Image (tube, rainbow, N blue to C red):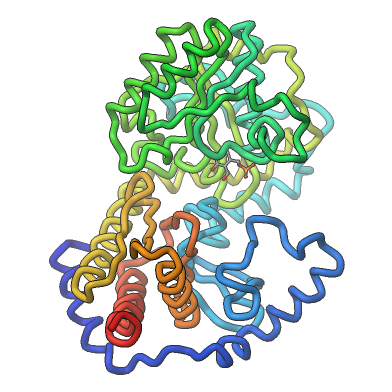
Length: 434
Ligand SMILES: Cc1ncc(COP(=O)(O)O)c(C=O)c1O
């Protein structure tokens, strides 16, 4: 979709504004009755009722909590409502839900015993398929989740360098080393994993000065460099190597999703290791840690094993996913669609005088929209009103987490989304900000 088309879409959406009526609180509660009932049951058998990724969007009564099925970029909640989904299972459904080529590959594989007692040809061919896609990748190990991939990278770095501390920036998973300041983690771990601020490389310099010759690796989730600025990656890599440490790009979110395959490649850096997961296998659980041969050799004989690592269904899914990604230029499409969505939202915020901004986190294939009113309480009010209403009008936008485009999104989906956001923002301007 071109910019001119975006403007046309926006003008078109304005014509429909008169038809908009927000859902009342009571109507929202009635709308998600089955969802609320499931949540009530869940609270008695699952601690807190949810796994953390399924936290309430606004609250459990007035926003959907349970989905039943998904197809393409659409999901349906247990109360029967349809949504255009912009979370796509936190970015893992790169091609869309229930993609036929991917799911056929999985079905074929599962007929032959998907997890066998020894090594499998797929283990070799999966890593062989990934290596050419990532800068500097000469060897790799396969795992199941992003947390495992980053934990393996950290362990490999420690073994490879003989050093123990890790400098980190961003979310790297749920294991103890990733959450060293939580009260449930044994004390002392935080000193082993000092943090730096990616957009201020002097903070990394300071970590090295505080811990001379002790940092094994620097691990960075590249979305922490928002707005995207390639020179920041170059500077962080330079500082890391100057101090004899390894540089790990944690591309669990961005690997395969961002053109061309990674932010490392996009920014023109060659990290020592890269971790990838979410978008690899279109929703099937799979992860990998890849890197320079000299570094990765430290993984030989190192303990990083789990019963399900050798599962080959997800590897079959990855082969099918990668074939579509590259044959259909998926990454460039996502970026273009994301750009149109961001531009449309910013145009609407400007038109209606709403304190809000849309941007890529860090690039347009991963957009986000936030309210920027100077009063935090009013900002929260605006945000809750906006997200409740867009959800109730069939657009699944997450209020706190970056969004993800998928190959299943069409231009008409973006158009419909902007139609709804335009109506809600206009209502906010006319009724709530006067
Ligand atoms: C950058 C990054 N690293 C690691 C992880 C952990 O991945 P997982 O949730 O699959 O364990 C995430 C998850 O969101 C992530 O975004």
